[in-house]
Length: 360
Image 1 (cartoon, one colour):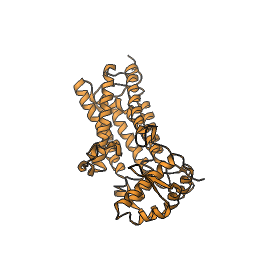
Image 2 (image 1 turned 60 degrees about the vertical axis):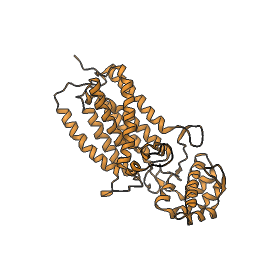
Image 3 (image 1 turned 45 degrees about the horizontal axis):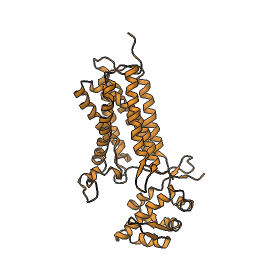
């Protein structure tokens, strides 16, 4: 069975070639909306001092914490060079160029924790209880976010074994070739023939075939024009696949690698499964901090397992013991979360939250 060639567009609604409503943005929005609904349910059926008139503010600040922490975490953990990169294109600073991708879930978690500390102290609400409340929206946001990663064709999986039924071929891996294995780009000559032409940024059209493509590749490392033309061709080969160009798909498919759809594995593990387990734990109220710490435990385990199927970030690669940066960060979070679960469970504190009020 031939592997599916990924052909999904990152745009839910496309308004131009580069602008529109993206699935990734809708994934974040879904997490925030469902998180708000979870807060209302806890207030209605459980025990929570977070009043409805505070909830919109709390969710809004959490959104800022996720976005700010996620971006800063990515720069610190995965691409510190962005902190010192400035250019003449808006928004000028690499840290702020979220449109070019790069968010860290561990950074987002830290950002939300800081929001909980600040919000709890200013509104006189137990900080640990707020950390318990955010885990439902967080786990659902991970679920939708990983699905959006799949739709975008990013954070794709490692090579799947022959005959793996759910294997997917991601055209986006051509960018990885350009960075690490440029010789593999020579296998795209037939795809260049099928494409026929590329549209340059200034709006002009340039013809392309296998011979022209190979000529650009010969000068890829030494000539800026050839370098840019290669990346522009890769971009438009991906766009052609997304637009249903059957000739390009047929020519491209043999060159691509059959991979695990690791984004979907992680969506189920980090999002849906964590959400279900946390919901079962919080059927009845728990001591403040227990649920938030259990989220840390469950998410860390799910991330460590899921990343066994995922390619590491290309600028980092595999690290000590063949593990990824995300796995090592998760081991650190796991250790802290386990200690926090034990501490929170032993505290002398009244149970809070839950989805059923305790009998009196």
